[in-house]
Amino acid sequence: MSSAGNVMMTIVADTCGRHDTLGGACAAESNMVRYALEKRYMHACRQSFLKAIVEWEHGMDKRDITSNINFFMNVPVTPEGELNFEDGVSAPGKYVELRAEMDVLALISNCPQLNNPCNAYNPTPIEVLIWDGQDN
Ligand SMILES: [Zn+2]
Image (cartoon, rainbow, N blue to C red; front, side):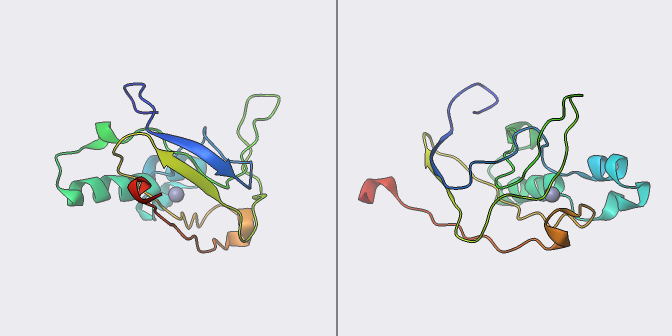
């Protein structure tokens, strides 16, 4: 959903079934709070997204970035209401298929979250395929 409440993309297929919509993208601020003050200058997805839209040079700024989805990330909510970052439940070949409902700029970060032990500190490659709906 856009920040204006418009449907941007629809999930039309999902072979994993577990994704995080609450944890957000890692940021310099969250890395400092979650891990340590000296983590401020490590990789942070939020800063990568901001850099990408600025370099794209279409007049976008941070207000144009809507909430992200952490595909394949397993973050259950505890009975106390806390987020628990656990090992993923995806596997090679698992996929999510999205249909764009409007023109969208999709920003992707295969986060190398160096502080989080999920996946044994070993993020694995992703593959992105894009089809033009006019040809299907
Ligand atoms: Zn990240």
